[in-house]
Image (cartoon, rainbow, N blue to C red; front, side, top):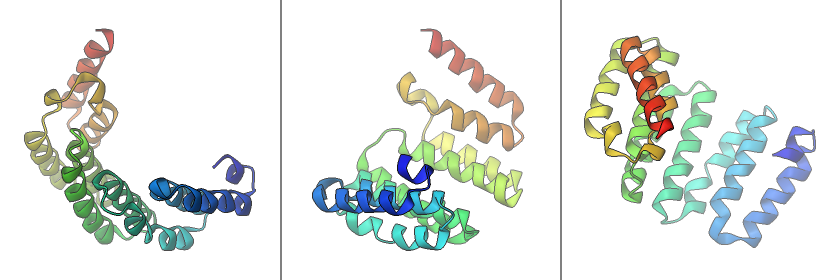
Amino acid sequence: LILASTGRTAEAMKYAAEGERRFPRSAQNFGAAEVNIAWASGQLDSAARLAERLPALAGRNATQRAAAEGTRANVATARGQLHTAERLREVQDSAAGASGAPAAHLNIGLARAFSSVWFLNDRASSGRQLDATLAASPVGSLDAANRPYAALVGALAFAGRVDAAKAALGEFDKTRRT
């Protein structure tokens, strides 16, 4: 990404493709780098095409599959394909559940709630998603270091739950000091 940020996109893509070939167990990571390089270069169509390869590169690794679907959802969102992005988030959530990552469902649910209010201006839907997400994955059930406070505060604030956002920020401040 550093090469791409200096205008050397072709060179950056070459190194990412070489990494994908040389390190097959990390192929999905290098594939995601190619998506990010294309995206950062303003080539969203290319990023989308490259993102379609990510699930195959991830193979059976649930964590990598979740990351692949998350990248595909992000690209779809950037392209204005919100229904496609939502469908991909559902696939991401399923893969994340299989990965066993404790914060996965919470992070995905918070992202979905934020998207509802940010892209659709639907605070009611965002609030329902927050309620369902927090009931299924309580923040307090995670180790303090794994609690996604930034995403939580953002989703709560944009959904119009300012008092809850302030409370979450206060909770973060308490855990930060211990």
